[in-house]
Image (cartoon, rainbow, N blue to C red; front, side, top):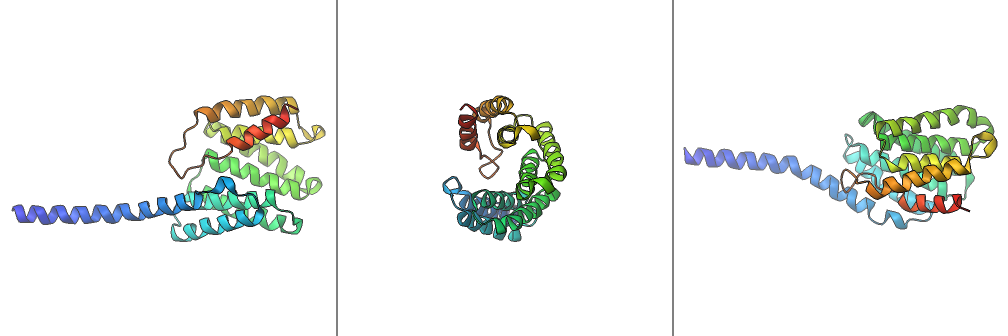
Length: 215
């Protein structure tokens, strides 16, 4: 009887290890891909980071975070890029992967912040043509991000940045931008990510935007 119990215990232990190992490997791979992201400064560096996350996404097709970070990296490659001929490619890749993340994890505040950012990319490509289409969509996405998680600082940072950089005739407002960015700053002080690999970016950017709003 004792021998049977011992064998049964070993089997359960082996099953437990098998269940934990893939997740542990995933987390370690994500942590490695995330390390040093706050030092990236060029479009090429962001694209290299995007490739790392895409490889993880291919291995872990049921996880939403790799697709989320591919979209985020493509967005940053757009922001840091100098070659305007590549902007549409970056925006479409970002849209493709943020939609994948959304399909895997619907009604997620972080994903809706990123959706709003991606909509903003299309506006920047051609404000006169894309503004009427994507402007309202970006606003709706941001409001949903705030509703899904009122304590998400990135939602308020994105709203503040939009108000700061949008011309007044199109709804921009520097005073409102400052107030919204101050709200974001307060929320960054208390925000705690769900894990070591969940979104936790934007605090330094918010500080930079707030400094610009104060001028």
